[in-house]
Image (cartoon, rainbow, N blue to C red; front, side):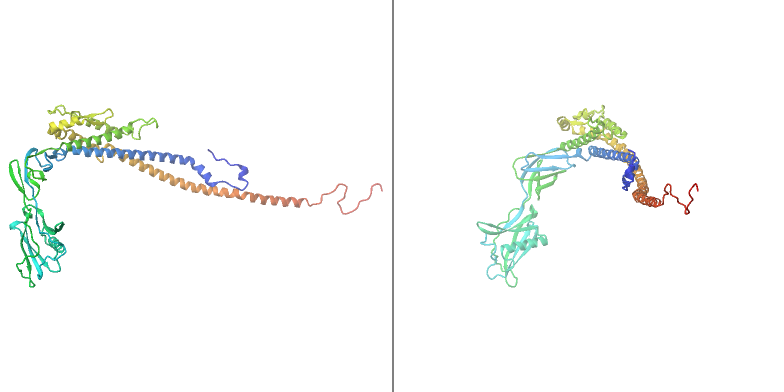
Length: 493
């Protein structure tokens, strides 16, 4: 719309709206700015979509790499027990598939010594007149280490204070025992338990005597009476007919790569089976299919026609996306008819392609193939020359290349175009800002003149009014009246 002025309004002293006039003059130029800004917005949307799809592509590459790893899911094994209540088992990748027979005769136990009950845990355990006491505790059986428990009257001569003293000494000097006070209907007892199981945790009391005021043993025992020690025995079991003894109920050296956890003694046989962990392979394949489908679906969304917008997605015309789509389709439909084990393509494993290009898994077919011939499944994916995952990984290495990958090329070009547009927009905005200042100065001067016009008009009118009044005051001659200074004679004299 052009700029128009009302002459009457301009001359009444109101002037013009300078900012509105300047904005109207610059509106045509700002149209170009809006066009560039819209282009920049489109590029930003495309860059966001490209980055999202590129992230999908990298996730797929990670999933495919997992299928190519010879030490990954295909090397995983599992160990199962026919009686988990007796023994459980776990396996690592070094374990070899096989079946084993286990008989658990006894479990490894901690050594314990305890006293007869006393009436209270807070009364002295020293007989009247005794200055102190000394207890010798042997840890580790007859060839173990003997620890001296010193008792001082008034200091640690009750069950409560003695248990605290033993625990403090055990922590500070690595005795490997824990003392507790047990309270039941019969009274209070002191119990000392080894922290280790098996023979290395066997306990025994080798001395229990009071001391006189000089610190010499009197031969008279303290008021503590110790029962016969219990526990401190090794686990005993047979594995495939071979007898074993273990200081711990966790056994990691009987079957290579397998850790046995003995839970209970049992007179019967327990079967421990070591086999390939097909659940790990199934999980890796499922992760691959999920990552592949996410990528395909996001690409499909770009090419799909929207009736609401009347157009396709922002990347529908992107050449790099078309290259990626073609490459993925070729990789997913890879087939090796010469494969002697019958697994020639994904469909052989129950992994089928849907009409939209996504994949779906027939779980039963896949499970059957893994159960019947897991090595053939591994060869299908990981064969050095014909492996599906091997070849797919090579393709993805090229597709995800930071400099030559098709999406990375598009992203680089997009960023360059955005940078150019940003520079153009910035330069143009600076030009508009300078032009605006000049126009404001020009029209501000015009506005000042227009606002001053009524005052100038009043001054002109005032001057014109004074001039008119001065002219009208002169004597106008009247008809028949002489205006000269002498009289004339009458006619006919």
